[in-house]
Image (cartoon, rainbow, N blue to C red; front, side, top):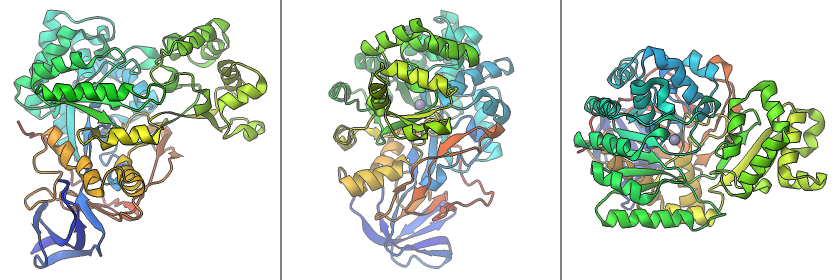
Length: 558
Ligand SMILES: [Zn+2]
């Protein structure tokens, strides 16, 4: 007797092979058979031709903290995500000494787009080492499956304390870090993750610890990961991080190396393809360097209290350290403004490069300014005869920094993004789920790839879109028994309607610890999601029955 049979499903198996119609049987959390009339079952679901695919593996999330208060990591399961890879960019919460908890939260608050209050209320500090953290997740249970990177910034803080954000490491410190990485790999880390990106800053604009690492340290740590014979190395690169430098790291560890965040920038239309070509050449030399791309336009909602889009401008640094009245004084300061204007003119920011026409007023704080909603900063400044930065900051000050702005700064050009997605080697991910919570929500990136890019635009087939969300990431991360629909594989399943699959626009909710806000979206066209054979979502969203069928994945292919 099977536990479940899904009848008359259009099977899209995750390998890229053409679809076919069949029944799929599940027993003991695994796929028992894919054939017509596989025998009796306790439960039968009539798919009526809907597509049945492996569950989505979201390769770039930041659910490390959220998992400790929300084991379901909503809203990911409702969007078809059955496995979340956490610890990306090296922003983790383990290992962490009790004395460094506040420092770790202060580092995370900024990059996660979550208030320090929310983190202080939310995180259950039930662990110290990385193995402890994985054990805690296993003990408390997880909704979807979870694979965890050991994070460079946490490892560095564990060894160096507050100095981790200030200086290079000594030989002894590097050796200590190597031992931590090796121990984490032994306990079941999916790999080692780091960031050299200028946009990654902690509270008050302090650089994330990994940004202080020199080449010697990076080499030593990826070698430690490679010594385990397993693992994926992931790095979010900064503007000065060259592909040859990354290739040398890939060579040092001899493991798949994921490079984020490869966005299309219409102001430098060829730059991302030049990097792509360099990575292709590296693969030709036997070094598995893989671009990690996003299929979503990067839309960011922000206020002048914490405007992430400006924070990679060097002249913006003092604003990250200021709050309240001091921040307002700084915004009014002509010298601060002159510095920012110079940085913008010099193209020194990673995100904002002077496109005032791409910044819009979403919601004015003062009801008398409602007529300005929906208009761009460029337009409004031109109407007022002001420099856009002066208009922008003065308007923000008038509104007591309460104006909600939005910016679509990267990945907005469909042709450019399409070219990135069409390359079959590129890993489509970058939902950043669990981070930047007040700026955007791309948890539904997989449904967007299926609905927008495969169905509407037709840049890839549905079969290929499914492969890119399932079989391909499973291979990159060494997840052996998921990402494909074959007998014997884990029953992580997504049943969807290809005619309607997609995601809704984001809306704001106040459901974080301490009542903090975040953006969420809902899924469209999803009819069922199963994790290890247990249904976690249906057409109305996640099923809140308290079950946690996910596993903490600890065994990866060598
Ligand atoms: Zn990230």
